Amino acid sequence: MDIKAGAVVKVIFAAAFIAALSGVASAEVVKGTVKSIAKESKALTLQTSQESVLLIVWDNRTAWNGINKPAEINPDEAVTVDLRQDQAVAVSISRIEPVIPAGVPALYLDKLEESLKTQDKTRTYLFVDTRPADLFDRAHIPGAFSLPLSRMEKRSFGRLLENKSARLIFYDEGQGGDSAVKGAELAIKAGFTDVSVLPEGAVGWKNSNRALASSARFIRKNKSVLIDLRKPELVSQGHIEGAVNFPASGLMEKQGYFQMKKQVPIVLYGGSDSEAAAAAATIRKWGYRNVTIFPGGAEAWQNGAEVLQTGPAAEFIENSATAHSGLLSPKDFEMALISPGTVEIVDARSAAEQANGGFPKAVKIPLQDLPRRHGELNKEMIQVVFSSNPEYAEMAYDFLKSKGYRVNYLDGSVEFGKQGKYTVK
Image 1 (cartoon, helix red, strand yellow):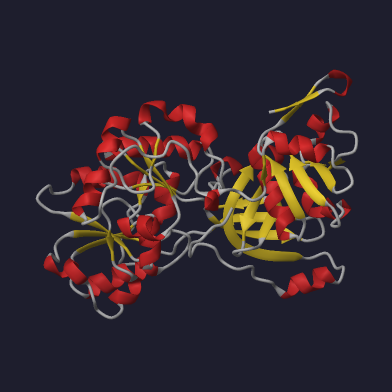
Image 2 (image 1 turned 135 degrees about the vertical axis):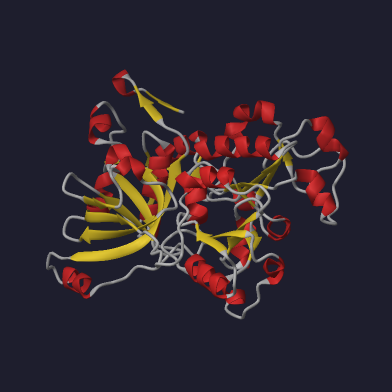
């Protein structure tokens, strides 16, 4: 899975890490974005750069800062991890919180709706997105206005100057960045009288199960899975080019059609924005996190001087660019099982699950043990990982790939029976 966002930050190598390489027990402080979590295995994958993924393990001694319990961690959150190099176990995991200076009101998500309901109905409010334009185009709060901090620093406020009494709510990615706070401070200096900051930002909005929106420019310029949720007869009258028609009423039956990276952008539109938002929530539950809506749907597309395509839309996701290169179907996994000369099967299930059955020649390394035991694998061979859950297998895949292994993983699970029998699902 690839993550493109300003929220992804590079690994910080402390001097103590150099000591660890010399054999001295020490620690390394890393910052990154949570990709996936296996809470039962006490493990998560942390994206620290475009190519680097760490598998972080915690235990009963791990301290949680700004997080009451592991269940509160969300994918795409930025965290800092103090890692024990000698044991590959986290000393502490800390949520990165934004710093809101005095004089700038903070409006948190849990108070947002109540605040907006009780405000003066004669006044307008506007979400102001201070991130770069490409991040806004990819995923923004519906109805928000794009005003990158770089523009504000040049005193270019655009149409905001039309109404200095409007209620302005500034936000950025929400990963410890400061562009929203700086933007709010500049707005106050420019004479705007009702300014606040949404500390959780775009990521917090998404993690609260609210829908983010993509712009028409993003749909035009990027490879994304575009889904039209309307009935086929309406779709035939005019749809956005490249859209796949999965009617909202039958979406639950289409889960098996989503065979691509979990980070592939998916944009939905339908007969209403609420219908698209509900569908987005469903697809996010399947593990796809970059799911947005296109507000206004086909009508908004046409009103933006874009052309609609008539006739039936595709009924399958066919864009090969979205395929996950490391993903193996059950059939391909079966072929890997009979290729022992070139393939090394890696059983990443828990020790208890491994004790209930397995492949005799598989290398048994539970997911949480991979950071300290991956050296047992043969880099001259191709690794094929399976686990009790495809998402956990993908976590192992991400980690091993970042370590230079030629690795694939099963998009499914294996059930073991008596006398060595098994079923690949």
